[in-house]
Image (cartoon, rainbow, N blue to C red; front, side, top):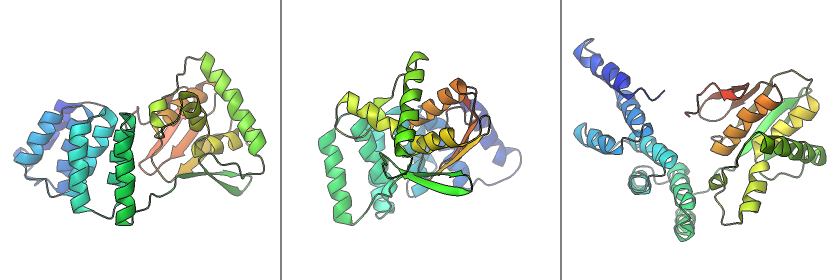
Length: 259
């Protein structure tokens, strides 16, 4: 909700009013509140003051916010800390690579990929799945293996045209490949959760809520698309990514665009 002062008051009341000693998770919540609000100077001061620099959870929180705000300097610092604390975890490498890609620093993206290869770290492939008529259907990005691929792609093309009239503008910065803008737009429209949605829309009864699961975090563009589709189709869409549930209804999401 962006209620920074409210959050800080609750945190301070733990020890001053209720005699509760904050845990690492509470400190991480404060870092999350500040960093999501873009108050990175205060974030760094808080980490130093509370001696939190040896905890991976803190830097994971900072890195996620740096990606959200495009803060390359602090994002690189957070990632390097995580490389030291959790050298075999793929998330820090991927987040830093994504920040570099969003800035068009493709040479640095390649360096991160080389570093991952040298460390023997493999990125978990993203996938989404949806239940239709008692069967689970799994999709990966750009998937063309489903028996109904032609109908799914046709449905997504129809939605693409409808969304263009609604004012939707693709967030091509979410495509982390050095390709043309047109190719980036096509790439976005074939993300795994959209393919799962396409199947559900051509298969499920009108008016029935659609439930999709995803093993990774939903990207910003897919999140925006799901909001608009929920409005133009009058369908409720629920997506459970690895962070949380997203309940899309009439053009808005239950997460209030913070995840």
